[in-house]
Image 1 (cartoon, rainbow, N blue to C red):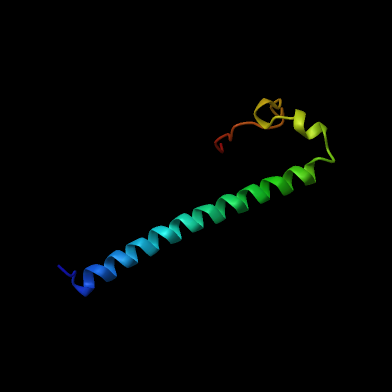
Image 2: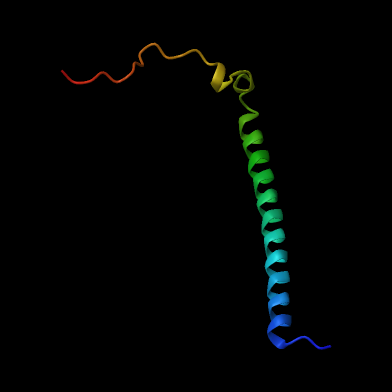
Length: 70
């Protein structure tokens, strides 16, 4: 039996939306990869940056918690 026009149109819309979502996810992955690659190329001139890990960096002694005003 033939499907009503609205159901066919809805199925086509849904399929196109899914294709668009997949296409955009793929495009974002490519852009992320390109950005990471460019960042690696830019920082390759500074080999000692690779050894520095932000989370392992020693705390700055001048920083203190905010003290309430008296």
